[in-house]
Amino acid sequence: MKEKNIIKQIAWILLPALLILLAVVCAIFLVGEKSREKGTLLKGKALASYGAYYPVRVKPDGGLYLDVARFMQAVDYFSRFPDSRAAGELIYIGQGNSIALQLNDDQKSRYAALLKKPNYAGYRIKTQDDPLRSYKSIVDGIGQTLAGTNVEIVLHDTRNPMKSIVAIQNPITGRRVGDSTTNFGYELIKSYAATEEEGPNYISYALTTKDGRKVKSTTIPLYQDKNLIGFICINIDISQLDGANKDAEATFIKAFTTTSDNEKISEVIENTSRNLLNAETAK
Image (cartoon, helix red, strand yellow):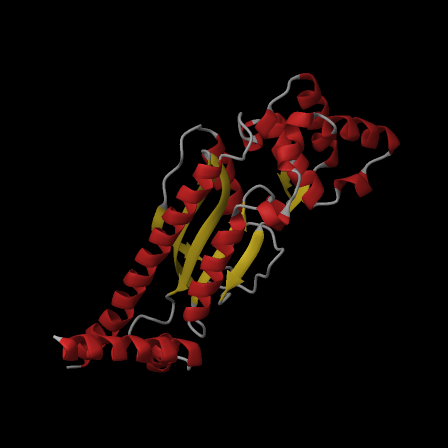
């Protein structure tokens, strides 16, 4: 009997979760189609595909940092051998991490010369034109729908791995907006950059947090004109959803099924019901 109750509880959890995941994928697809129609990004190879010139490096403790020496090597290389997309992404990383404050006068002069090239103006940071803005609304909306649960939804800007998190809801790892991507995300960025084709989604793979919790994860790459611009990641802490911790399961189910009052939505529902009733009466 207990086993049947557990199965029912799990079913009630998984069915809405699957529907939400389907909604996420559909929304991502629709936003992606609109982004592809704009065709605003630069052409060429991804900066991460230039291994010797990719300035994002990994520290011994696993954190990421911007290697100034390698950044300047990339500046010099793309000044001599133009690649619009790679140089544009280099400029994007430089702007996002205030690289000018870390350069000497000679380095600033060389960097300024690269910035003046007209083909690279498309990668100047313009918040109002950022293709990730629509995805941020999706992540925030779905994440807030799951408020109180251990379902974390994260939006990463892969163009700036050191400050990749631009939206996060229900954090289960203590991360915040402005934090860097993980080593796993860093390796994924380089892996996706190795091919000019759009890479696959990674669905429901297992991860373990530093404190030993089991996490079920999904990573969905976001593209514009075949240019990788971000990831949406869904991370579910499943360490206490094994049937052994009743309190944790009850808390999850309560948070998952909690609704909130919204006067405007209630008004729309009432008007819809009234219109349907009037339509039926008129028949």
